[in-house]
Image 1 (tube, rainbow, N blue to C red):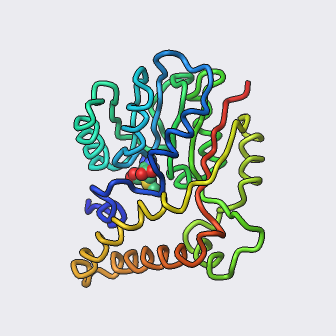
Image 2: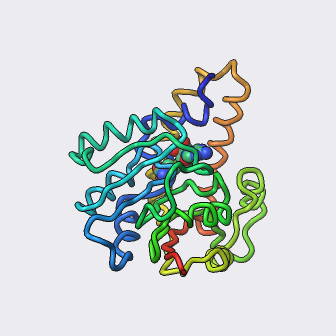
Image 3: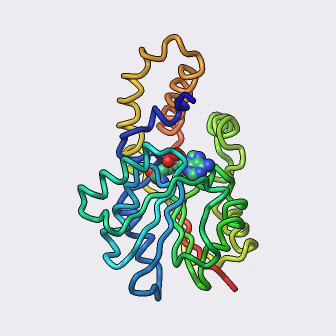
Length: 248
Ligand SMILES: C[S@@+](CC[C@H](N)C(=O)[O-])C[C@H]1O[C@@H](n2cnc3c(N)ncnc32)[C@H](O)[C@@H]1O
């Protein structure tokens, strides 16, 4: 089967969604009373920038990194080897809606920029069983930062992720799904540009190659629109990091 263009567009980029090592470290620093050798599951890890940073930040941890796209897992394995942390990272190709792990296998679940694929509430509910009592789920999710976003921003999100809501609404969903909200914080705009800038360079190269592929061309145009909307409306929405703890 041909690789979906959305994967081609993101292969071998530093990361596949907004984020930064500083934010990964900040979120991890909020986890209290972890065992000396925590088991971490990274869900939708992509090329694994955050996976490698977690391994560096927590020298005792063991990480199982999962993604649906094998080339991303291969990229992560290469990056982990370069960083000297491969002995603590295992990659598993698996879909986030059918994760092949026993109940209570992990101290921490990590999902930067990936839960939107399954849905915020759906992911929280489906993944909770994987956590040991008191375990943490750390994730980022798109959110409105203002009460009345502009029509252009609303139109864009209606086209790509109509389920986007406010941080307060997602906090309520998390509590309802059996988690305590330990903390949340917004990603800085730089975390978006660190993702968009290399991706835009890649798209400039790919544009000519996809000239006879209407589906791929449409995705390039949509990605350009995504960047243009963010440039104009970065104060209206963004990604929020959620640090959640499983409640018994
Ligand atoms: C926006 S990227 C985020 C990647 C990485 N966490 C980051 O922040 O750079 C979303 C990731 O989810 C993966 N993905 C898409 N559908 C998936 C599924 N059903 N199960 C697991 N991973 C999936 C994609 O391959 C991609 O790596």
